[in-house]
Image 1 (cartoon, one colour):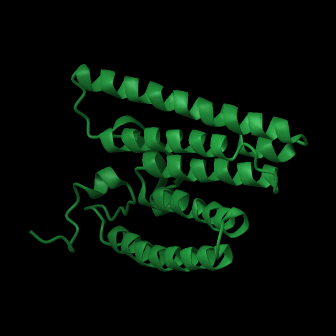
Image 2 (cartoon, rainbow, N blue to C red; image 1 turned 90 degrees about the vertical axis):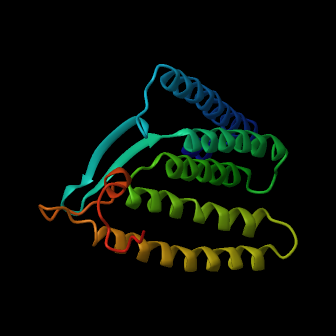
Length: 199
C-alpha cells in the first residue's frame, strides 16, 4: 500500500489507497485480537502465539521471527487506530500529499514490525525504519519550529539507538549455549543464563 501511493498520480486516488490500506490494517488487527482471545480461551498458554520464524543470516543467528502476546496485540490495535485517524485527519493535505501518505504507511509498517518481532536484530531493524518517516513528517509537514524539532528528535533517537544497539550486542555475545551458538531470539535469550543478570 505504501508504494502504491507513490505511483498514483491523482490526489483522490492517493487518499483512497491510504485509507483503504489503513482500514485493512485496522480490520486485520481486530481479527488478530479475536484469534488471540480464542486461542487463550481454548487453553493455549504459550508465551507467544502465532509463532513463525524464517532464517535470514543463520551464521549470525539472525532470523525473521514473529509472534504476539497480549501487550503486542494491544499495541498493534492501538497503532491501527492511530494510523486510520492520521489518514482521516490529513485528508485535505495538499503539500506533497503522495509523499506524506507514503511516509505515514511506512511508519505504520515499522511500528507493526516492531510489535511482532521476537528477534532482537529485526526488532531493532523495524525500530530504525520508523525513525526516517518520523523525521520527515515532522520536518516537512510539522508546525512551529519544525526543522529544529525534527533534528532534535533525530539526534535523540540516534543517541538512544546507539545505546540500544550496544545492549543488543552485549546480549548477543553473552548468549552462547553449550555448542557455542549465539542468538538474537528473545525466547531463547529468556531461558539462557546471561552473565549480566543479577538476582
